Image (cartoon, rainbow, N blue to C red; front, side, top):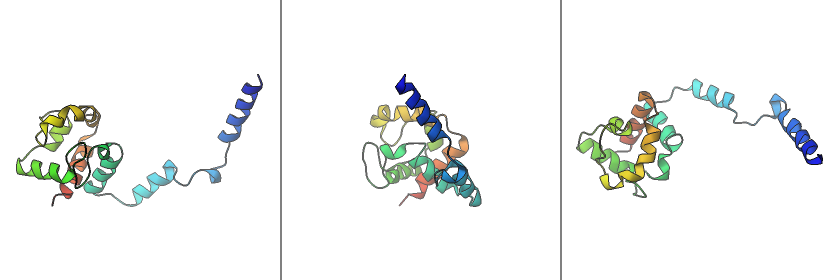
Length: 131
């Protein structure tokens, strides 16, 4: 019973903070900062690549880790005139390193949920790393 009372007090105490006590990076402030500056497709793609897409867990800009580097992906897709958006939608085969595709399948499930704009932005970011 004492534990329940202490837990209730703790919940009430921490949930009743003033607006001024909220963290600096709350969602409203972040949204406003994003609205002040319109991001380019490459910038949106980078945000997706590093965040929502979780791409950095397997892909680095200039070195192969679990998956091919971003530069290698851009190079191969450009040389073969591949459709990166179709691949990320699960509508075309892997062309960079087909042997690694089973590792990528979980992420394809995720990228299938992205909007066309998000996928095009991701593609723009990857191509922006082409050397």
